[in-house]
Image 1 (cartoon, rainbow, N blue to C red):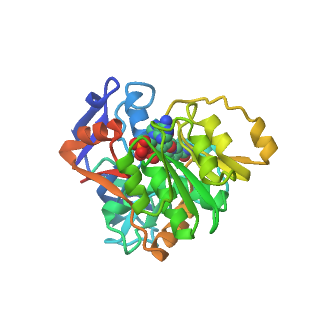
Image 2 (image 1 turned 90 degrees about the vertical axis):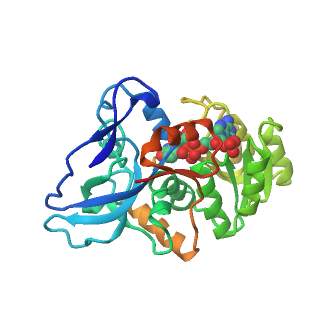
Image 3 (image 1 turned 60 degrees about the vertical axis):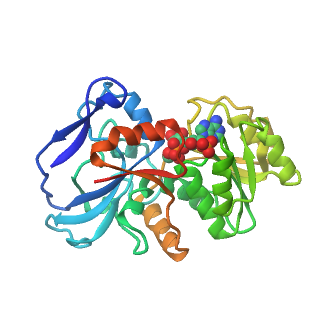
Length: 336
Ligand SMILES: NC(=O)c1ccc[n+]([C@@H]2O[C@H](COP(=O)([O-])OP(=O)(O)OC[C@H]3O[C@@H](n4cnc5c(N)ncnc54)[C@H](OP(=O)(O)O)[C@@H]3O)[C@@H](O)[C@H]2O)c1
């Protein structure tokens, strides 16, 4: 079977095609014929770290979906032909997060990912693909969608009448937008592109701010919300956005701490959080249980992920370059 491996130095040159032996499922495991995989910003960070500890020879990409092709003994919940998606963390099935789960992230330093024709995973690390979704659409869900769901809904309690601010129009941001619109919450989008803001409006966002033209977008958020601010913020930027997020949050609001788009280690001024009685919620993707709950919501509201572009297996380096360029709106997918 064919797969991509990371080899050598950082950059797209480290994506190397390989012919490898098709794996066999052992007891409690399932083999999946991967039909689609999707890229996340994390995969650019991983590519940039290629050649460093643990990544040499790794199959990249955490996100993928496909069809069950073989089951090992003792597997009762899955059958050949079932459509499934892999959860981001192999070992976080349910309950609260434990730091030990980090090492079970697919497509990172310790575990292979989904950019491969066949993958064997524990039966417990899978979720069923909702009937209304294609496998291509389902491949966009494991990282970005579950992160937005876990942060905003499970932990953040987002509901009708709330106001959500999302930063940009990438994967996590648009899933957050779609969940909020389905719940009857108001959505503020900041983006570098007026064309993307128009598309966000068509999805139901009502306050649209171009952060290139309006660099003090926090002031614009306050003005557009009559001084109230956003009850929920998907903090995706990091150092360049954090203080503006804090200045945009409503009294009693929640900043869902997720992203590193402008770097690591923000040193925000937290004083306003105290005076507004606001919270920061730290999120690392989510569990199989979160994924399954989110899928029920997607089905109930007939939500389809926004797939921006699709690449063939031979064009994987172009898919990475596309994500790196930042011109995408939603998700970049690889069809296997
Ligand atoms: N903690 C976790 O568990 C977790 C899980 C998933 C993702 N993440 C993180 O969340 C972030 C988003 O991930 P993703 O996969 O959704 O990324 P993505 O799809 O690559 O989205 C990138 C988009 O972010 C926007 N952006 C870039 N710089 C910005 C800035 N300074 N201010 C506002 N928006 C900006 C741009 O949108 P426009 O073109 O519209 O401006 C860009 O296209 C990343 O940092 C990723 O590492 C963390």
